[in-house]
Image (cartoon, rainbow, N blue to C red; front, side):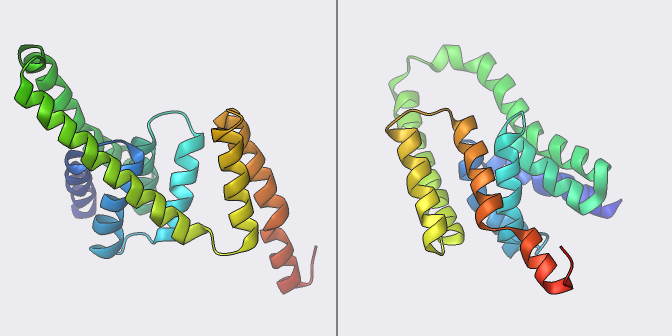
Length: 186
């Protein structure tokens, strides 16, 4: 029970301190879940992040669900998800009550301008970590360049890029081949 309460409490903290969506969440998760608690490692975060991008729903909520599930199964996934969404829900309710009164206030607009800049910095930090953590050889670097060109230049659907990258990863980095080499079985 204590671990479920810890899971809930920690994801309330993460949910309350994460602005800007899933990409900015990576830095907070690294600090709270990897460095402070050693609950997961960066490879797991990257795996969860990849899964969260291709499953329906908000990336950040999906990440909370995956981590909670890893820690305490189905109930852990539910508890972590509830902890993560509670601060945002409270903030949205309060914002909807008060924001219309402050939307034209120049100081509020200045604050939002500053928040957008900070979120951009958090996203850039995440991109740098993704590049450092995943692009270690020529194959992964070429996949990055191809995916970027397909997205930025040709406006190919992200779904097709992810699907293509998954197939390329299966063919270029076959875990099944490494396993069969170890065991001697196909």
